[in-house]
Amino acid sequence: MTWIPVTLSRLARVNPSTALLTDRYELTMLDAALRAGTAERESVFEVFGRSLPGGRRFGVVAGTGRLLEAIERFHFGDEELAWLAEEKVVGEQTLAWLADYRFTGSITGYQEGELYFPGSPILVVEGTFAEAVVLETLILSVLNYDSAIATAAARMVAAARARPIVEMGSRRTGEHSAVAAARAAYIAGFDATSNLEAGRTWGVPTMGTAAHSFTLLHDSEEQAFRAQVDAFGTGTTLLVDTFDVPTAVRRAVEIAGTGLGAVRLDSGDLASQVAEVRAQLDSLGATSTRITVTNDLDEYAIAALAAAPVDSYGVGTSLVTGSGTPAAGMVYKLVAHRDGAGDWVSVAKRSSAKASVGGRKSAYRLLGANGTATAELVRVRTSDGHESRRDPEVTERRLHVPLVVDGETDRRHLGEDGVQRARAQHTRVVRELPPDAFRLSSGDPVLPTLFD
Image 1 (cartoon, rainbow, N blue to C red):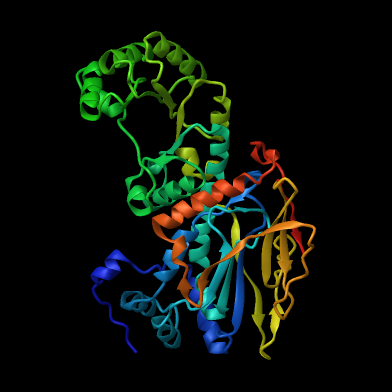
Image 2: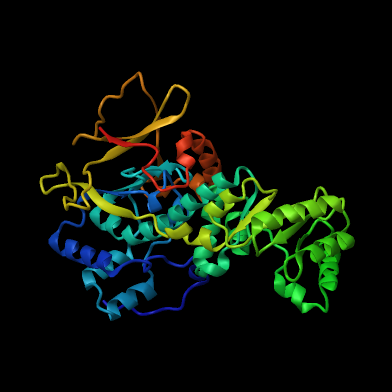
């Protein structure tokens, strides 16, 4: 059989395949398993992290909705198949199998926005070995980045202490990662993004006004301020640190009046400068004018400004790079499959530093009498699928929800509605955490993970 490239259809251009967003060894494993007759064995793969990124106290699951959409688009068209044939990645038998590929298995997992801890079975993929193994790289590339960003974002939101916080890091990462980062940050509690594609695709609120170049374009700072106020009204935000800050603040109020929406500071010693600007605004009668700061902030800088009269924050580089940990360190491991006799067997990696726990699992959050989380409980099922008996004296919240059932995706997790659902979930569950969870210093996870 010869695979001939064809021109992409309009549908493919709008909804391109994700099938080659993968590593070569996914397909070579498939190729070998098809030849060996083991490819169709029922299997269970699991996504988990051995530790939390950067010594954080808790992790945040993000990217699930993006991933489910990507799995729906994981199929091999004529162009993908022709390239695989030309490069001799796999043989004709495998090419024919891939031509009909659609994931028909089931996926359960933590709801997007949920918290996770070391060993948490964040995602469980059930299907044939062939169907499930080829999804490994796609799954990890989405969950590792988005969860790392959401985990960092949650720390920044906590440090901001209910003050508005905006994502503005598109220029500091890849163009597609920028959209993913904005989405993940919004789920973790950020209020808006500067990225327009994140607004269009995922419904994340967008905001932004002007950079220093706008001021420098004009013949004077006064002219620039007047142009911006004329265009956007007095409720706009004026950038006041291009030249001399006190002069700019005075000029901004003279032009916009005491109803000026906000001023933005993007440089200098923010703690002292914010206090000085607040005092100056109040003396000019602009008591309702807000102050926003945007100078290379991270969770530590935000926390240091807790006592300063800052009204909102804008975070860029630190957010889109996970505040030093741009990947969550999650892995995708086979934990159970049917053997040659048709019986379920648990399997696990035994190497010293990377040991895993085999078997199909269910996960629960244990809660104390006051509703505060006390532990992550992972129950390993028996070979016939049963769980250990629960303790009726302990309150537990089930963490796994169905995401894909027999190849059909739960549409509630997709699109803008899915993002809002994930954001609401995060808001709920973060309230379960004990106070120590919000310490910024590196340390142990705030909840232990117990295996039963």
